[in-house]
Length: 267
Length: 270
Image 1 (cartoon, each protein chain N blue to C red):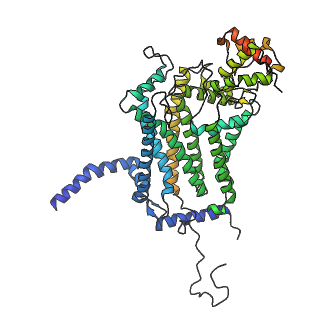
Image 2: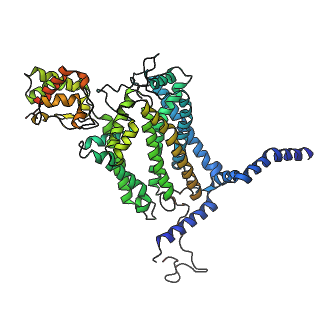
Image 3: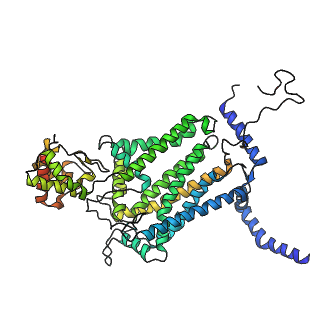
């Protein structure tokens, strides 16, 4: 009895009190409970894991991306030792020399494709379920914006290895931007940063790829998940036990079906 | 009963909240368990792709998932075929359908903008409460058509035959015969240069090329201009107000003269 209460008081002072202290100031504990300890419709299943799968792919991109940023150098200047552009040499270095660098780069390279596929699948699922309807319109809109920023991340990341594939795909991409009316030529000039695409452009694309766009995605993900938590996940529409299903109107107290015409309880 | 949509919606949502509270399952740990399993699958799939990519390729030599990298970027080359990542193939192929430069705007900006607006606005123009797919024929047909067209465009983009210099140069005798410059040595040399220096990445010629930028068709360009125009133009297109096309001065005046002769001889064939 004495030991139990000592343990209880130990927990109280080392865990609960600090948590309370933080919660009193931030509501972080309440928010976590609100997120975790809620009910979802009983009939949801694997189809509704595509969103969190996309989130996982994005987390993989973030972690591998941070590691890559530690070794990558966004410069098109020629490295006097290798005789190749600095950016290209740093990619070679990551792939061939850094411990497990090939795995990190490979996962980042292919994680991008997996992320985009999962975004499309998730969107297809939401469309099929009609889950974008009232009251989840804003969840849908943030989702579409996530798809667009996700694809822009893929587009800006494609240039960074500074190989022929990257370079020419980007030249085409920039020229295409230039065909847009009004802002098009201005945008193309901004992205190309001069008559030839060199370090100036590379640094700009790198900043977009690892600061601006991921920042936008992270912000959008928070809004998206907040809305999903607040509004709940919708049941499959064909489910017999779907949450929110229509119930037949209740029969009047004591009524017996069939004895009196029109008392069947229906219309 | 003429009850308004908003009222019905709110009633349904209140019933949903109530049902979830009464008959739902806890998100933690029940639903989160499914999410965790799925997340593990995702990480494993990504890692497997990375391993296959790495071990099947070697430097610039491609394996089934492509090379580690291609040659270093070389702004001077004109023979490299631009190719975006696979999820842009549908856009990439869309560009080939529309003619440069009058209607390419439709492919680069028009269709993507309309698609984006339709996508963003979906919950606002599809306001019915019905969620069952079988009772939403218009939505389902639209979805199937969208998926099909994206798949076809992606497939076409992936398998599009690109204008490779080594393949095109074999067409030179055919061109010479069709355009009737087989006896003109200078024009034939020019035709070979034309095939190899990447002109067909942007231009089209007798049904070949139609690269991603789809610049004007040159099959009959010799009807409107002659070599005395082409040579200075190729030396510095910007001087003629063309800021899209790069300068080909690096080819040297002799080669440019050959190209000029070839273009002059291109009267459109039969």
